Image (cartoon, rainbow, N blue to C red; front, top):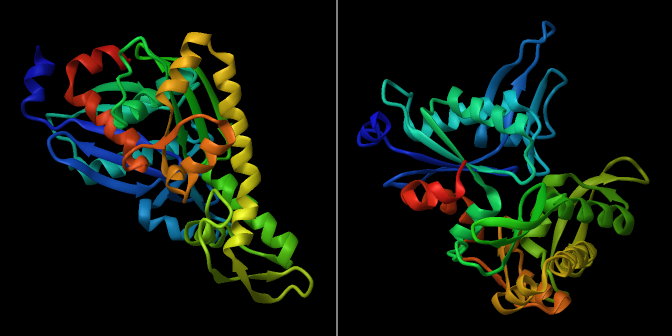
Length: 342
């Protein structure tokens, strides 16, 4: 009763704590925070860590810090690897979205990565409580993604959702508001960046950084050969002379670098479909594969997976924010909260 009364005076928060970005929806307002999931931490000789910057202020520090400062991404490969830093990230971003919690603290729903252990779930709850939440609900990330994509997950019908995240890819078959079969592939968007780094090293003999590779992926990358045309200059360290050097990288180079990773993703999707009961597999063939996450925005990604798997493949509307929209729906609809949250 008291929680319901407090709900009239506070604004609930829906949080997508992703490996690349953290997004927060404020009930009744919409998306109020969309920041990189990065925290810059200073560790002096006494070992007591101090937060220097969070989100967009910490992002430029990746790969550019001295020994006593680290730019940390606390969520990696679909799991929270540094709970202390994750707590600091949540605390700062929740304060930006909601203000400093007073007497009336908000309710909070958070997307839960697949395969979280009981200890990890307790730590996530503790982090949310430290960020000022009075009531915490954990929503399985695949279900949140499906809700954000407007899929009828409560029906006895199979849906296959592929969440192409920053450091991992989650492939899930859903039915009756549960994950029937799931698989997490490590790497995600960062694995694509690494493919580009390796390709440029082999074919152009220069070492480029991850930010440069990501820029090449976003400007010239496509899931099919010939999907995008053009070229751009990439700067790095010459492997032969050890001096800075610039080379021309073409769209064909980038697309050739990405092709093996996309083929591996298609193989994983086929294996998941083959592992579920025939009725669910037939549902997937009829309903198709839904892509969410930032990786779904790569040029021609649905077309490439459609060709490689033989399944209908579609990208959700605004795939990058599908998970956060799904968590927001859970906070707005009480029947969903009771059905999918823990």
